[in-house]
Each structure stands twice: as structure tokens, then as C-alpha cells.
Amino acid sequence: MSGQGAHVESGIWMRAVMMGGIFLTIGVLLFATLGVFMANDKHHTWEELEDDYHHMEAEYALDSSEEGANISEHEKEELDHLHHEEIAAHLSYLSYRVSGITILLMSIAYATFIGVGGFLNASKPNGDEDHGEDHGDGYGDDHHGSASPIIFAFGIMLFLAGFPDFVIACKAMLSADLTPDFGMLALSMVGLLTIVIAVSNWWFEDLPFNGEGEQIATSYPFEGEHIRKAGLWVFIMSEIMVFATFFSSYLRMRTEWCTDWAIRDGVEACKDVPEGTVVTASDLLRYDFATLLPGAINTFALIISSYTIVLALKTAKNAKWEAPSGFMGKLMPTRKAAVRNYLIATLMLGSLFIVLKLVEWSHLVAEGFDIGTVQGSIFYIATGAHGLHVFIGLLVMLYLVFKADTVGYDEDNAQGIEYFGLYWHFVDLAWVVIFPAFYLY
Amino acid sequence: MGEHVEFMGKDIYFWNFIVLMFFTLFEVGAVFFETVPGTSIVITKMAVWIILIVVGIIKGFGIAAFFMHLKDDPRIYTRTALFPVLFVLLMLWGIGLSNPAGVTDLPSWCTPNWDFAETR
Image (tube, rainbow over all chains, first blue to last red; front, side, top):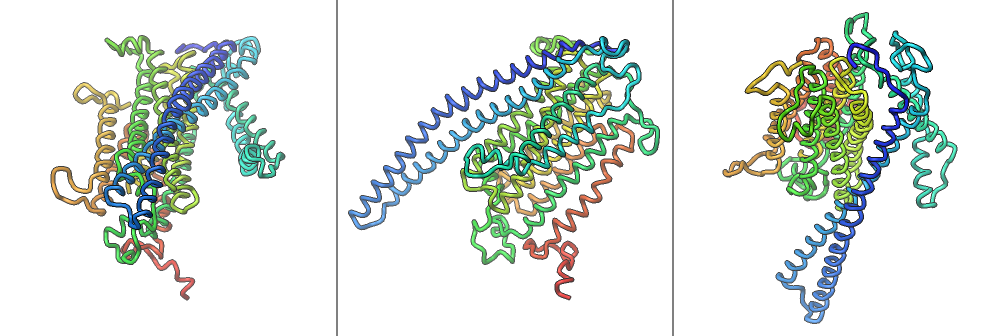
């Protein structure tokens, strides 16, 4: 498609609907396997161990009361051992259940986002039928600005205006204990609808983009640079400030806490404070291989995903690309397939990040570390905000995969991958700070 | 782009990726082990602090300079990226480290007399 206007039939968008169907099918299958079949099996094991534990506890308590003495050391050890096994079985059950549910919810979100966007665009008339000679995007030869980002921002404003009541309404519909404000719920829903329409229109405008008409800044300080790229860097600038607020507030609170680490390190002000007074997420995570593993895997997953998106961009920009030999050659027979597959790999790694994050949260909550404490609040808000950024990135990546699979990316129109890559690398960069601060320190 | 610079047949992105993976492993290990493996040398809290900060800076540089192409892109992008860092540092110092009720024995320049208004 390089060097000439890309013609995109509206019907091609039905492939996005099909993509949504594939995501939903994969999600349901994985949910059935992990969240139902395997989780139920683990639940049985957990229940059995729990019964054994309570049975043994009652037995020992009876024995000791008959003898009038406390339980022996050996019995205590056995009880402890069984208790640990029961906790491990509970966490194992949670891992499967939560990962299954997360995968299902994510696949529903993916299917809805790409499916609805695709359906809306498939319903539109073909660009050529509508606008005569143009790129199929309805703009003719002159590419100019799009209204979609402004409509998108307006949708977000409406959604957030009703968001607090949206949450209450959702809770009310589940428990019926609360009285929901349906007016605000409706406002949120209108916001969501506006977002979907804006995003699908944005895609409709971008899909035929073949590199021609990229807007160039004409004034200082970005003179000669692509406006979209400059805009993205300004956006990243604001994102840096968002994460700085989380980090500085955490640091302020953290310097006030007499954590076990501070106590063991002999900090003067903490000498009279007993250990366990202040428990941070890192206290629960860093000392055991199994508890540290999800966070560590997530760090590696994000770094690998940063690399795969770089590979996608590099492949798209390489006009002299040749298929590799062997197994990789079968996976990536053409440049188009290679770009798409690198993007799919990035999508899968990002999805893995979200799944492991929620599994890890479920373990922390099961251990009593919830959002009700100051330590829990800052941990869940900061890591949750980061997770939200990852998830939004994944939704954008769905479109990149769709475009890579249909129109394709090449050396002329690879800006989409490059600019999204900047955002994705920033998310990785934020994790470089969050991981040591909240998980290791 | 940096793929033109090659070392041992691999481009700069590959080596950046390897360095990032290595340092991640290193920081996890530094926290996970209480002593240096194979020795009785204790890894102190201060050592962990230094390791985490230094490794964070190296990883941050690797991502920003190579993956985000700041090394090869026009300087205006680097300046744009560094502009908020000034405010970030101010926030870390003015909010993060300056807690009057802090217990970490930080030096006095880190905890200016924020309760001045109250004491006056």
C-alpha cells in the first residue's frame, strides 16, 4: 500500500467483529478450563484440607482438655503443617479461579471493544462511494485533523462525571442493599457510548492511512516534527506527573511507617514498636519465592513486551525484510504476518500482566491486606492505576493487531506502532519504578 | 533508528533487552537474598536502597534512550521528557521525603521545618 492511497472496503470491518468472536471463544474456553474445571478441583482439595485441619484441631483440643494439658510440640507441628497446606491450597484455588474470571472478563472487554467498533464501521458506506477520489477515509487528498479525540475526551468526561454513582449502581444491582442514582448511571453509560463511537470513528479514519498527509509542526519548539508524535510526548509528560503523585505520596507515608525492615535495621524512632505493627505489600511479597513470582514474571513480561513491540516496528519499517529460516520462518512467513504476530505477542504478554496482577491481589486480600488500610490504599491505587494504563494500552493494541492483519503496516505508515510503542514503553518505565518501590522495598 | 548499530550481529534493541532482563534479575535477587549467595556477607537495607535506585536509573535510561528512541530522536523530545522531571524531583523532596513525622533518620535538609507555621 506504500506510495498510493489505501482503499478500504467497509466490509473489511466485519473481520474485527470476527476477531471479537475469536477473543470471546478463547476467553470462554480458558474460563471453563481454568476458572471452572481446574478451580473446582483445587476447591475440593482445599475443602478436604480445611476439614482435615479443623478435624485435627478439634481432636487435639479434646485430647488436651481430657488430659488437662496443652497439645504437644509434635501435635502443634502437625497442626501447623496442615494449616500451611490448607492456606497453600486456598491460594492455589484462588489463582485458578481469579485467572479464569479475569481472562473471561478481559475477553468480553476485548470482544465488545473490537466487535462493536468493527460493527459500527462495517455499517458505514464505503469511503469511495461517499467521497469520490480519496483514500477511503472521507478526507480526500488533504489529510486534516480529526474530531474523534475531542469526542473521545468528551465521552470520558461524561463517564467520569457519573462514575461514583455508576459504581454504586453496579453494587446496588448486585446486592440490592443500596439505592442507585440511575440518572448518573445513565450519564456514565452515555459517556461509554460516546467513547465507543469516537474510538470506532478514529479507527475508521486511521485504517486507510498510508503515511501520506502526516501533519508536520510548523512552529517552535517542535518545528518539522510530526504533530502526533509531539502530542504524544506532551501526553507522556502529563502521565509522568500522575505517577509522580502516587510515588511521592507513597514515599511520604512510607517514611513514617515503622515497618519490620525499619525495626530490624535498628531505626531509633522504631525501637519500641513491635514487629508486625505496620505491614506493607512488600513485607508479604518479597521474602518468599512463590509470592514474589507473579510480580517478577510481570516485570519480565513487560520488558519482553517492550521488546516485541520494538520488533514489530523494526519489521514494519524494514523494506528489505526477509523471512527467517526454520520454525520462526513458519511463524512469520511474510512481513505483514511478522508484524501482526509480534503485536499479538505483545497483546498476550500485556494480558498475562493483568491476569497475574489480579491473582496477586486476590492472594494479598486473602492474607488480610486489603484497601482498608493506608498501606493497602496506596498500594492498590498505584498498582491499579498502572494496571489500568496497561489495560487501556491492550485495547488500543487490539486495533493495531486488526490493522496489521488487514491493511498492514510498512515503512510508510508504521507511525501508529511507533507512537503506541512510546506509550507502551512509558508504561514499562512506570513499572520500573513501581516494582522496586512497592514490591521489593 | 538504533537497529543500524550492531554488536555481535545483534542490534542495540536486543542488547538493551538483555541488559534490562539482567538488571531485573539482579534487583530481585538483591532483595530476595539476605546474604550474598555463597558468602556470609549481609545485604544491608542501605545496600538494597542503593541497588534499587542505581538499577532503576540504568533500566529507566535503557528504556527511554533506546526503546523510546530518545538517543536518536531530535533533542526537543529529550527536553520534553526531562521537563516534568524537575517537578517530579520537587514532589519527591517536598512531599515524599519531607515528612516531619518521618522515622527514617533522614538528614535535616530532607526534612525542612514544615511545621514552622504551627510552631510560630
